[in-house]
Image (tube, rainbow, N blue to C red; front, top):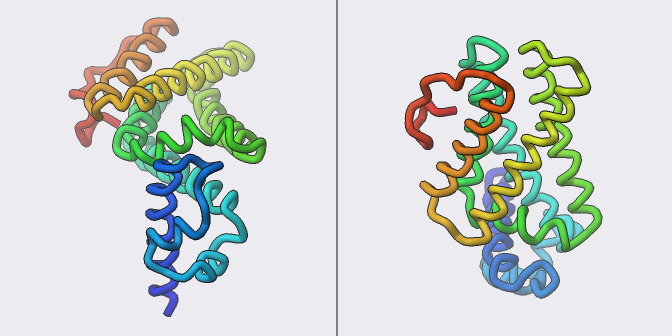
Amino acid sequence: MAENGLERREALMRAAVSVFSRDGFAGASIRAITDAAGCATGTFYLYFPSKEDCFAALIDRLYERVLRTVAEARRTATDPADKLWVSIGAVVRIFADERELAALVLLQAPGASSRFREQLERIRATLAALIVEDLEEVGLARWPAECAARSLTGALGEVLVWQVAERRPREDLLAAGEEVRRLFWRGLGLAPPDAPAPGTSADG
């Protein structure tokens, strides 16, 4: 029974991505989502109190995947700079692989609700805190590390928005993220490791 419940919730979330992508947050209806999921409208409310809660769950889903992938990548790192290097690569890779969901989060969420903007800010702060930790271990003082972390998350976010908005292919998004990573490394005076091509399993 629990498995069936998880399957229904998953079907609703997949349908929500399609409907929000097609109709926008304001134009999407719960009826359209349940029709796309092949279930009754009442089923929606078993899993989500409102359309806004459903959209918020999609934001959480993307960033849970980001944070999980970052954590996995960091376990293979040998030093603080390497942790930061693979973390940035992991973030870019998830956005490249989840472009439809990324478009909702990056393009629709900020303008759809103050709740979503606050949710995104909490997520950015979590990622920035990881970066600050790595930069302090590399040798930066707290304030420069915080400035650098916000600069990096801002630049990376802007580049991802640009690539997703233009519906660029996965390879272009990966290459753009790689360029941000290398520019940041040069700005900090660090030597980028000999990384394989973007998007490979060893890239982080």
